[in-house]
Amino acid sequence: MYPDSMSETGFDASARIYVAGHRGLAGAALVRRLRQAGAEHLILRRHDELDLTNQAAVEHFFAEHRPDYVFLAAARVGGIRANSTYPAEFVHDNLAIQNNIIHSAWRNGTRKLLFLGSSCIYPKLAPQPLREDSLLTAPLESSNEWYAIAKIAGIKTCQAYRRQYGFDAICAMPTNLYGPGDNFDPLDSHVLPGLIRRFHEAVQRGDDTVTIWGTGTPLREFMHVDDLADAALLLMQRYSSEEIVNIGSGDEVSIAELAQLIAEATGFRGRMEFDPSRPDGTPRKRLDTSRMDALGWKAGIRLQAGIVSTYAAVVADRELPLGNIRARQIRSS
Ligand code: GDP
Image (cartoon, rainbow, N blue to C red; front, side, top):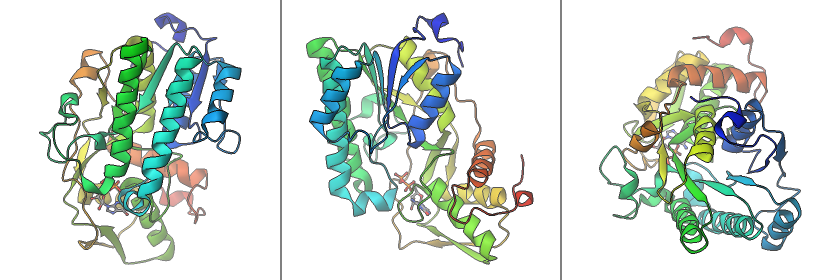
């Protein structure tokens, strides 16, 4: 946690700040955090207003608006099934989006850019917790290599523009994120929103059983997206290096433990079944956070409270398709 006023840390509140991907999970949280910090000039474009895979459109946008700061939170994202179903989109769209934005930001005088990556860039069997220097030391987990390869290329692009042109591009690697505004698709979402939806629907229908993909044994670290936004703003204000930076919470649970927390939050009292015919993905991907620790930053939202508040928010905002669940079914922590 750090000072709320952007000017206190030398960040000009009237600076033009472009948040790419502001309708996504991370981008929306960044907008909330920037507004809270007093940012006066946010530049935001929906997908139907600016196609980030279109180089000419992106160049035109940057030439016209010349943002001082860019948070690159736009990406094609999805869970373990989406990655293996749409490998072409995961490679192509992510490479195109990041190439277009990084290049045009540099060309049009952006002072600083923050690129958001992911913990899946690290090798499948790298030593845990995952340190930044294990990047590119061994093979990737195959279930999300398409996304990971694109994100690794994004890191390298930032490093190349810094080395050749002195462009202040920094790269942050968050652990698995969750929060309001997530994708709750039953098939293509990540595990946490996917299970919130599945348990929610089971409660609605009065089902006795909920099925969880895989064996339930993989370990995952989860971080509320508001913590990510806080950390990203800190990095934008205080960090400048080609070294990538992990952002983690330390909240690591097995998928079975996660399912139990979601069952409690949604009021599900039936049985959980595991489906080992579905892939487990990487066994573990906990991040080493020594670099963020050295900057004096720590995540503030614990997993159980974060799941309860996320569920309450998505029900209140009717983000779930069966969004008429009664308020008394929402347990408060
Ligand atoms: P990952 O962290 O990149 O592997 O992506 P996911 O969030 O998609 O999956 C994490 C783990 O949760 C994997 O072991 C999945 O098999 C498991 N899992 C269990 N149920 C679900 C579900 O309903 N959706 C998803 N996406 N994963 C699930």
